[in-house]
Length: 119
Image (tube, rainbow, N blue to C red; front, top):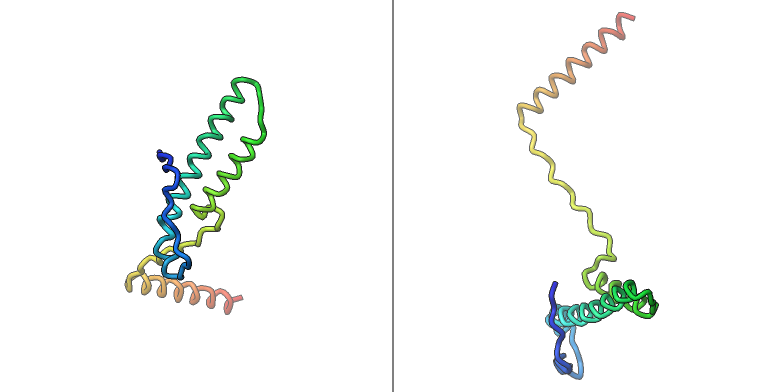
């Protein structure tokens, strides 16, 4: 994803109070702005981490900041949540298949009964 950094002060002014309806309505836009800003931070960290590999220098602060940024991005995408298991729809079974299965079970039971009674 390519995001352009937002200009300073681009966040809309927040009202004195937010209702549940306001939160619901403004949430996606605010998450998008937050994601763009986190991506900007990550790009900076990534550049510093790559440069530290080439120059044999290390500043653990950038690695820590990068990890925290990635963690926040994962939470925005809700990757920290276990996905719900989607149940597969059962295959449709025709009446003819059910009748054949029933006949096969009845035949198998009759064979089993015959073996049990002859022993």
